[in-house]
Image (cartoon, rainbow, N blue to C red; front, top):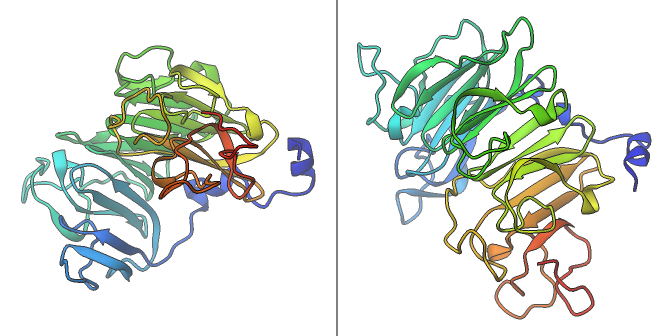
Length: 356
């Protein structure tokens, strides 16, 4: 189906649905590992007291509008409720945003087991949070961005456009990299840039927000992975850049890109509304450029306007849902270097050779 036809038939989704101004509120549920309090509740436990095997409601979190989860060092959780920001879990390098008692010094050691208000006042309601392994970003209703963690105190991010001119409408972060999208469709990135994940044409770190000049006025939302990045463009296309050694950029090869490139293949005529990049994976156990498929590394998921799901990157442990003829526990270890539509005919059998 062409992009024009998909639009003409009416979209079921649009990228604006994923902006924080469209978020709705509800009860927060958590499950999984809770060794450092990152679940925010202790209601359901099995034989292992640190593991919650079933979803359980987090007390006093009945009207949550946004949740951010930080990876690495066990994990942390940040949530917004009634315009206030709460955090709990592992406090590695102060990413929870709490002060030492009766001081304005950032606490970098005390873990928190239940939702606790963040010691930050932005003057306006909080809209969105984004968590990295060492730091956290917060977007307020005025379009200003605040940051804390990485052993630094809470403060407003400088170098972004003034909110009265071009307010920020979307943020994301992972590892030591951050991204912000403005109302006018401009993307700013800053932080670690080892793999070119800032999209600036080089691999040097940037301490201040820097405009991605190849995407001026084009960006809807962004997904900051730990080694690469993806952006949903306002025309429905998908742009990817950064580490690509596992085919996770969807560009048909295993090469890195330091500038945004538009994904083709099955997404050429689709209307992409959301993208998710692998987080919390600063490094690849299977190597950065594996010669065989299935190595542990990043993969990407894209959602289109009509609810179609596409995957690409490593097929490690079946994450791509691209299995065909079974020859092992998870099928043949064939990565997808271009977008694969989940539910379509598998490309890993004799009649459909793998792209990897």
